[in-house]
Length: 620
Image 1 (tube, rainbow, N blue to C red):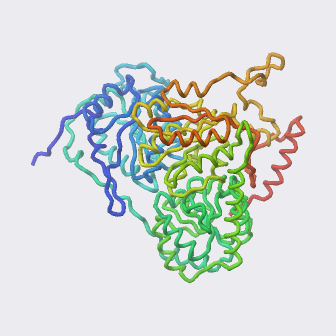
Image 2: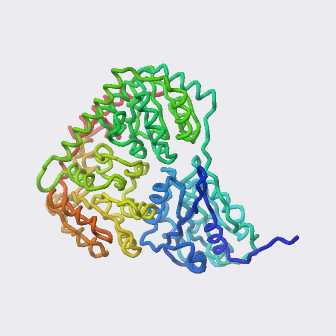
Image 3: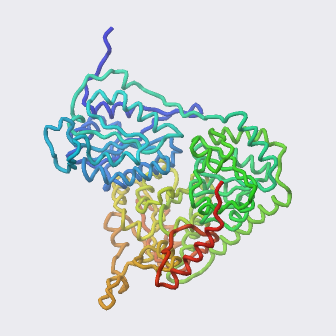
């Protein structure tokens, strides 16, 4: 019996395959791809570009920057709990390499995104082509090889029939809770346009099950015994809690047992902010209660966390000499960290089992009382920051308070870099599991506006509040145009503090006094960048891209602007200025190298402080 075939170009076959891929979890089935972001050039216009034009049901979105399109794809997938994704296509050369930062952002955060960069001619008959990198030791190389270290799966399609095996492998990785990240299929431009008789079965509907793995029984019993012996346990809730939709099971566990929870950046929203067992932010940007209880903990239960240095306070968070770790994670790599009892499995399913096995366990009454006290004390602190009247320019804390108060329970606040993430981590009152969207695995400047676009596309029912500083805004703001083009409304709070405030503060703490972190003219007398402020009008810039712009000079005007923005139907930018020197206090240290020798007294003092803090670090 002859095999049915379809004669298609490689690009056409790729798009037809992608639009027939579905994902299923808990019996709920949905298309995996929402479409394709792209910018066309000579490496993809006649291949992927032609295929997208031929198959308009696989929707194409025009973007302004290749890095930004990946950020949008990441935010979409993150908001979808990794059950939906985008493809991203570019030309060869700079179009492709512009995506590398986005690829790293996706892989570090373990978010699925499919990258389809154009590549050189596979035939090599025409070489070097425009934008081709030549090497004198190999002809089997292009700039797309740079994607290898930042991709979870990488392949170059040198013949059309190679996609028959490559595309299913790409889907296996993209839909795997353990392996997911950036998947890169490099597409030589001639191969994209080359035709082949593909088996028709390749284009049939495929449903990829996202399985909920369960842990080893003996490891589970060992973990339960360790928790039952604990007098001061603490849970570190990471992004895995949210991706597995485990918040209800977590709430059930902590309400019954009294075990407190501290949330990482990715895990914030695992519990409502006012849940009595919620200590708030964990780690370097943590709350006093979370830091104190982590230091005293005898058992640390990590759920869906990879224990970054911000979470572990540079390996100084957990000071109890007898501390034990129980790690719940779908990834074996993370489950074994800190010599833990590894519970390799889905967070929701493991928590269900723990809820059954720990039904008779409760923390000591005094410990539970202290947890509740810490929760209330921190909420009082947050309220005082929200109500603080700094005058003009405003403080960043009161700006956050105004946005939080204006937002509804299910709305999303989105941020990535600068001084905002730390303040948001501590101060944002999260009321919904998807209400706090921080890209902090890579803390990639420029993610914010493009990410806001992706988050809003994933759930149009939610208002998305993008909070972005002038530093990130100046790096990547042009996706405002895409939001206008697509009729996707964002509310962007653009905070101008005339430079890199976060790194300026870090610089000052290291004794280098904020060198090179302000946006100033070069001083002709000193030769340094310490002259007058630059006359850049960011509000006018945003308006030039089609956004509605509202300037708010004080806190009352900001609150009014936020209410006005709710009535708007297109992207609205609220421009405010903040006092970069008025900071929300921190309660922990973070290891950053300090010059070992220096002529500066302040640098010497910073080095001595570093040495003292390093003495608290532990190896597990």
